[in-house]
Length: 153
Picture: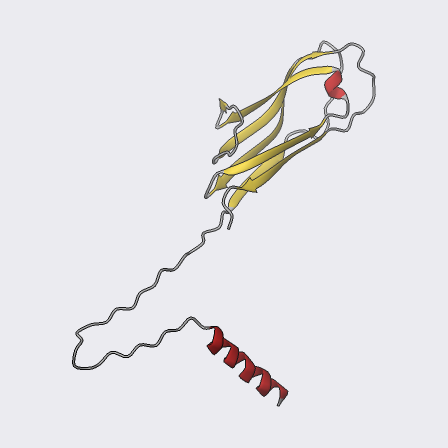
């Protein structure tokens, strides 16, 4: 009995909230009658992201050490551009190491912009110089990229 009551109430609610229209067209005066509507279809943004962190640890053996260090590679494939929010906590190393971040896209130098499009990206550092007074020790460095869709509803 309870299930029957819930079913009847559900059907009643469907009829109350349905977007239906009724029309009467006389049989002698008409040749055609068209009904139409506009339907909005929301295509949400998706992405495929293949990535690889290229290093888990890195040795600085001497203050004369310079050069490029590739850190991350990723391939982005999305049906719309994607915003990227970078974050880095160098744990104090940035006070002792002069380095520039570089980004390549599909093998070519790329100036990071927002949003980014599909492609193969490589992110790394060019170490320009190291302060001879850099204290010995281990320095956990946190790097992250947050990918944010540009299409939302």
